[in-house]
Structures are given as structure tokens and as C-alpha cells.
Length: 404
Image (cartoon, rainbow, N blue to C red; front, side, top):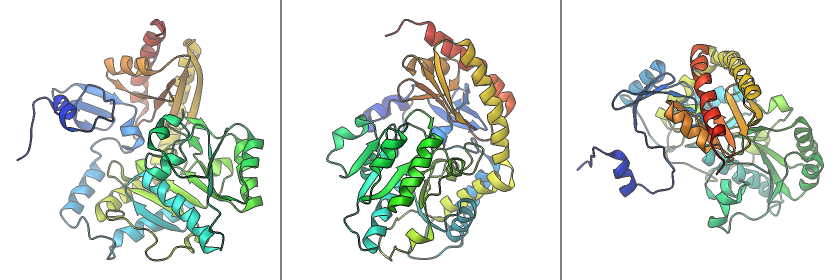
């Protein structure tokens, strides 16, 4: 029997594992950049399910494709072929320059895949002891065992040890230290071109150059975690090329399915050639529904002009945010690109998130003191102009309150 309740929050507290700090609001429908409660209250969404709902909510083309696929064929497993997975892999290869794809269900799974095959590469090349990983301070790569092992913040890691050994964390702003950390014992370096959970921190050109130089000198592989900053989020397909980085592997997720769970690990041919049948797998990975959703997303992003739209409205958003920063003395820094922005405050940002929620504006905080904005790609300038005064009022209210 289906359990129902007039109070889903109370039922959640009784039956769902309590690992989330949820805001006390229940959404039942959405349209574009708006979410609605049962009684019809509207909230303007500037976080898009933490960067997932790139096409907004109830996008007509995505909804039609999902309905059509659900009535045709959802899943066959990877024991058999279906036409959509290869098509999606070909589209991603064209977009990224990485020739092979493995499909999974999330960004964290994509990171796991990259870590596994970095080690697989060296095993295949007669160096099975070359197992070390270099990651950066403030990095976040996911919560599965491998991904959390290369995630910097000890609060994500310490209660789950022992984790994967041989991980070295290096300050992202210290190019010399980065060079020194990458040696002939390093299987791979893993970087977010723009760190997301760590506070929306773009990698500096000096650090990117140091990584590229050290990888060339030592042969270490480069894994780009573009789960959050990739796939058009910055107004560019990926942010690695902006920094002059040429990854051997790339992890994707979040926006790729527009809300349908899908992740992808992309491989250069060099790394892919080390893979053998049976090395890895996924029951759900690359199923027809997920691939169909991802193809709709890529159609909108490329043929539909959505990437250019992100660049345009991203510039409008940046202009408004910089104006807020000049008026609010508690704003220490503004970082990001396109539709990925972090506003660093001189105090914890949780009160800003609550003040925004009180004004029916959805944002979130990360790295304690950073307000993070990840709007849907379909957001327009009028919605940005609606959101900016609400955001500034939330910041001002929080900054006026006594520090706790």
C-alpha cells in the first residue's frame, strides 16, 4: 500500500535517512525558472537543483521526449545495444575532443570511473604501482569512496576512513607546490576548472600552466571534473580549454540530463585503449531514457543556441552582481563565469540563504561563507532583473544582523 501523508515534511523526518538539511518548503510543480508549492506560491529558482535543471522546469521538448521514450522503451541493460547511447557518445566526442564515453548515473560515478581508469592505464603500461592522485585544496569531487578520497574538506572525509591511500592535496594558488607534488608516482591529477562546492573558485592560469607542465614532464594523466562547470554552464562547452588544459579524462553529470540522472566519463583514445571488457560496468548507465534526455539537452545547448544565451545573460547577471558588491560592504569577492557565480561574504552565508527564501528566491551557500548561484540556462534578463533586488535585500538583511 502506498503511504501518503498530508505532512510530507513530518513523514520525511520519520522515514528518510536524515543526511540533508532541507528548507521547510515542499515543491510540487515548476515551469521555467519558477517552482510552485501545493498552494500555488511561486519561488524564483537561482540554484536549479544544484546545477541540474539546466533547461528549467517542465521544459516542453524534454517533457515530450521523456514521455515518448517512456512509452517506447526505457531500459535493456548494457548486455545489448540500443541506438541512443552511441549517438550520445558521438555528440559528446564532437563537443569535447575526447573520443570515448562511459555512461553512468551521476557525476560522482563519473569521477569514480575516471579514477579507476587512471590506475587501469598505468597497470596496462606495466606500472601497477603508479597509483597516486594529486588534488587541490577546496576541491569537491563527490561522496562515493573514491570521489570523497580526492575531496579536500576533512568534514566530508574523516568519518568514513580509511579512504583511498596515496592522495596528495596541494594549495591551488601555489603553482610551485603543484609542480612539486606531481611526480612519476602520480597516476593522475584531478581538478575542477572552476571549483564548485569549494566556493566557486576558478583555477588560476598560473596553476593551470603548472599542472599542464608537470603532466607533460611526468606523464601523469589529467582528469578534468567538469560536472558542475561544464556543458555550457559558463557560456562555453567546457572550461578546461579556457585555461589551456587538455584532459585525458573528463567527468560530466548534473546538467547533462536536464533532471534525468545521467553521468559520463570521457576518455582520450590513449586511455581508452587500456580498457578491456569486464573492467567496469553499470546496470542503469546509459539507458534509453537518460540518453534521450541528454540528447534533448545537447540539441538545445548547441543547435538551439542555449550556450550563446548563457554567455549573454551571464554577462547581464555579472554586471548586476558587481553592482551589488559595490553597495554591500560585507561582500569580499565575486567569482565565476556565465551562470555560475559565488559571492563571498565576510561572515557565514546561511542567513542570506534564509533571507532569500523568505523573499521566495532560491539560492544556496557553499564553503560556509559563499552564496552560490547556478540558475537554469533558460533564465532571461527580466528574471535576472527580478532576482537581483531580492538577492541584494537578502544580503543587506543578513549583513545588518549581529554576527553569531
